[in-house]
Amino acid sequence: MTREEQGMAIFIRGHLRLLAAGMRNSRHSGAEILDKAARITGTAYKRGQYQRAIEDLTNLINGAKNDQA
Image (cartoon, rainbow, N blue to C red; front, side):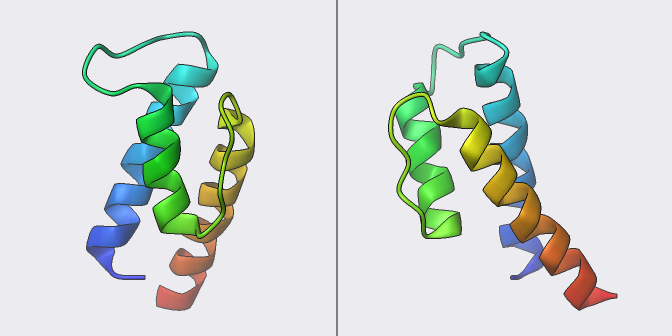
């Protein structure tokens, strides 16, 4: 995972955390953010599966950090 991909994964994870807390953004729907997370992780998510996507992205980010160390 490149640094750019890792940065995008961190951003998407943060957005998912806000969605999971009930905060909404007028520019991006939950489905759009889950689709972006799915492209990064390779796992398809259904509507409302924010916590699962957060966990998958966290594992991916931590794995990338361990590979860089």
